[in-house]
Image 1: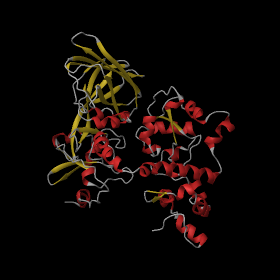
Image 2: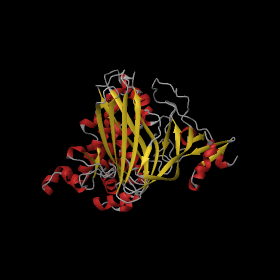
Image 3: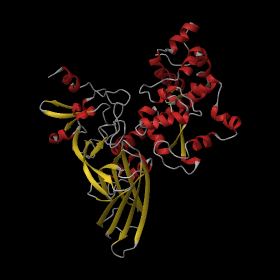
Image 4: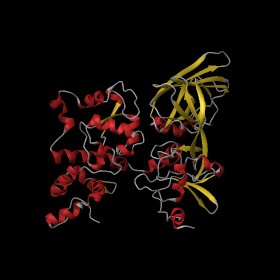
Length: 502
């Protein structure tokens, strides 16, 4: 065995778990297996590709222990061009032919990355003992003639996973858009394509979930793009954890399907072939993680823990405003004779910059910091207009880390916001040096004034708020070789009393 192989397959020492969910793995898979599959490539004849599917003899099940019924459909789509996909679901009773309900869905397709498409129709008039016929249609619209698309994993059917899971309803309803189509737990189906010709095969890797045992796709060319699974070592890549970063290939005969630039990610150990990833993925798919892990764990967290992140963010915002003596958002109306949120909304043509979704009202918009507040970048005119779903996905990522931002979109973002492209395109997390310098100059103020305030000295469930703020602040300053505590001691010849010293 080579040293490289030893480094890859050495079993790391696992840390003890912080808390347990009470749920056991039961899917028959470990989460460390994968399949190499083929996708279908199509050339659109003109500007419109149609997908049709007819589902007959459909029987529905009551969901969430309520009089609620879902029929859902979805797929994964890759394109080299920006496109629009629209879909519709029409349910008809085979008994009387009357329409039960028709649901329509429209979504922008982001080019050069795999897109997750999914939507459902919900009805409370369905009869469980009646067979229905369902027609599903997708239309892919391209701005250019004869564009090409790649399709995988078409799924369609009545949702039955939540039949006896009444406690899952709240978690299903919260941020459902982030988890489609995996959230429906549907089987893959064959489909009918028109206005297009098949022009070959592509390749996709599917990883197993250790809860539901489904094999769901991962984006092997853009690992930060979450399809079926969330990353494991996003901030500490490369992932060196065996179970999370490499997966035994259950159909090794398909290894040759991988393009040449990905062949190096296949490793052999003890006669078995493994596919390795840079960032690694969670063992559970994103939906099982939501329902089976996060949901049971969250009630174990106390109220103070739920508000910790919000407290730190508000403290960072307040600290930056006072250090710079500038509150752009608060003073925007006075300086520009216009509301701040209206300005950002209009600057981005009333659309989500990430997915292109039209935002009809200002209230539909979330204002993104563009560069994360966690790294001391304030909210100002450089903010980005995002829809609520995309803003939730971006969280505290830098633009270059966000899967929905291509290199071209980052260039556009630089033009719109005025932030230098060198900063936006950087793969390194950049701290706002201006604020870092101000913190060094005002270190006594930070500890003796800012953190000494009554709200920050409160102790909630054994944690002092000032400790949380200081630790979060010091964490981002470590790469800048700034030690706030040491600087304070050199200046005051004592340690501050406003934080807890270990």
